[in-house]
Length: 189
Image (cartoon, rainbow, N blue to C red; front, side, top):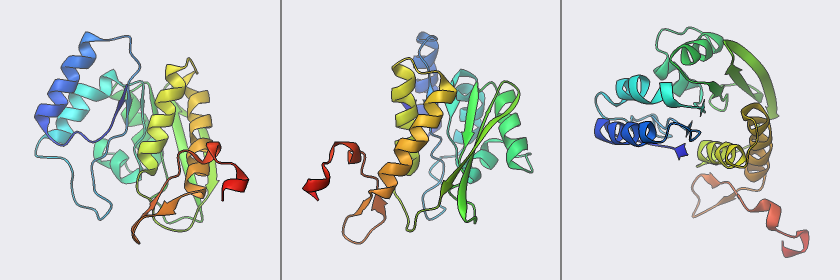
């Protein structure tokens, strides 16, 4: 099950009830907490409800750096945030570096009490809408097909990067990942 933006405490509580009724279903949470411009997308108390009710039920969460620090407020580094998320009950945490001011995007996977893998991707030009959703959905799809989480994370990042590489703009806005890049024949372009 892939979960994205929740918005309000009542939504978090409803999702929590559903997840408790299906404890064997893998849960992938893309904790969309802020809009691209920085505004909050979580109502009052929602962040605490996510921490308390959902994180302990998650197989994998995929926060970007700002979201990871919101979910682990005492953490002073990426490693500290990853470990804090694991301590909250999350099985795996993939903290993405898309919001960092670095030449490359550095993503870090945490699990089994600490860091597992570090991935480095060439930073693509432009602003993207839906990159985190694409990554979380790809992870969920691969895990649903029986892929182990670390392998699913590896493959999902490759898929996401390639969908961003093929992204397109609608009316001059942020670029939209082309999630069907793999189905397009070179002669179609």
